[in-house]
Length: 113
Length: 114
Image 1 (cartoon, each protein chain N blue to C red):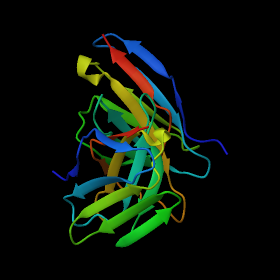
Image 2 (spheres, rainbow over the protein chains, first blue to last red):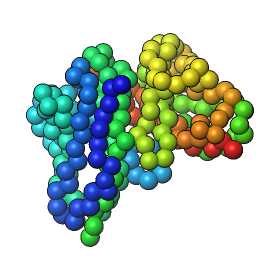
Image 3 (cartoon, chains in turn blue, green):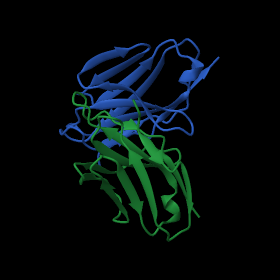
């Protein structure tokens, strides 16, 4: 059973600090990695995708991928109260594009004023 | 540019009944995936449709079936509903030429089975 593991949290971070969210995955064949943000009662929103080892930055968000360690992370700089949400790590299964996406159970992030 | 739409928003059904949920993909997308999300869990993959065929399927029983129409919209059908089928059902579309497996979710249908 291919799995995506996340710490369920809650992770509490002071406003303005860096929030660090981590994820490990079991399928060595995975090629595509995603972070979704989900507010309570809403559907997941894609915030970052990463396909190559290293860092990818988009505004206050940085995704980091290490395929050798089967590890992907999301850093949120200058955390804001609006960042309080559940963050879902998602990984594609196998090599084909538009393939099955496996989600972790999510990490709840709380930004405290 | 219209995003992914789903209908209905909420639905209440009785055990044993059947339900049909609908999804229209984002403009320019041709692939539709369906997910079930229980409270406190991540979305679980049900199946994916492309070119009107089921291309991939997760670990869901045959009570869950689907269809994709020529305009790429899709339906999810669930027969013989069980209490455990109560969940948020999410549709996601993908198919952008450059980032084919980036999936964008609709608002979801909240199904309650009593």
